[in-house]
Amino acid sequence: MNAGGFWLGGGGCLLLLALSACAPNFQASASSQPCPSESDLEFICGALKPEDLAVIPGGRWLVASGFAPGSGLKLIDTRARTLQRWFTGKSDQVALNQGRYPDCMTPPDPALFNARGISFRETEPGVGEIHVVNHGGRESIEVFAIDSRDPGVPPQLTWRGCLLLPQGNVGNSVATYSDGTVLVTVLTRPGTTITDFVLGQKTGYVLERTPGAPQFRVIEGTELEGNNGLESSKEDDGFYVVAFGPREIVRFDRSGTTGPVWKVTAPEFMPDNIHWHGRHLLTAGMVRDEPGCGGVRQIVDGVADGMQCHRGYVVASLDPASRKWTVVTKSAPSASFNGVSTGVIVNGELWLGSYQSDRVGVRALPVSEKTN
Image 1 (cartoon, rainbow, N blue to C red):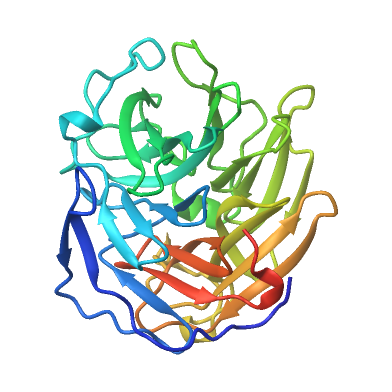
Image 2 (cartoon, rainbow, N blue to C red):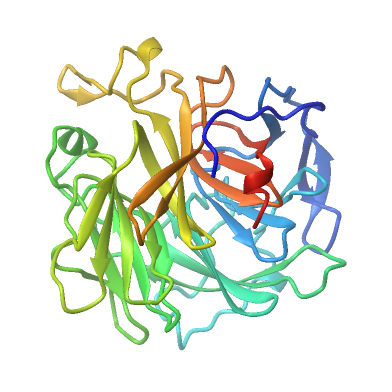
């Protein structure tokens, strides 16, 4: 992988926010908001706070979360450069599996659905499940079946149920094992704050719920300074967590070891979400020391800075075997795109999500990165 910035030439973004039209459950409409491209970024508007992104295998479709009330889930067509509201709550998108998911009898209210971290797992070619951290109306992990076997229509989404988080816990990211076990990070456990982990205190942990278990449990030894991004290992033998305060990726084993197995610090940026890209973990986040924002994150009047000042971003990959970082790209602050929190690669393009902005960004990658 090569370091450096990449320019995406030509064209502005397509101003499409769909509420339906390409297939059942969709209606398309043009966005009324301008969405001009910048020197190295093309934008797709209408994605209110797309905090996380997930790739649906096949090279065309992405799922974007929406970290705001009613923002829910969006489906992105990477070829057509369109974005559509996906879960509408209509009856043909609901099929409760009460045996597997006994906690909730009704789907999330689309008017409240506040989606944060998301995780997709393919169970057979063209079929899989997506787990979504939800803050809208309940603190939960919402589970949807996805069917993308018909290449002639957009993937179909069906709500199957939810898993409620323990009282007082707010989920951040989610990951799964192939046996159906669900993992969730909690950034700040009850009684702690963001300011605490900026000051170096342990505030979060990882929750686990195995199939058939009545509730989540805290995994002993997973307490970190702001448990953020999360990904399970390829071999199902452990997981990786972002400690947001110290900018670390931390490895935990599934059994036999309490506490971290190893940890590695990110190169001058604050990694947020992490996802697999081949055999590497791909992560993105804001620049740690941004001169235009007064340098590193500050504590002002006893409270951590809210990070609204526009910071540059870095996307980097970590090889878990060697624990070596490679910077994929880095960028100066963008005038219209702040709070970069995730990055995924599809067909030689880097797609970026943000927990603050109203759009998804996309930019070209060098030839050496043009793989899925």
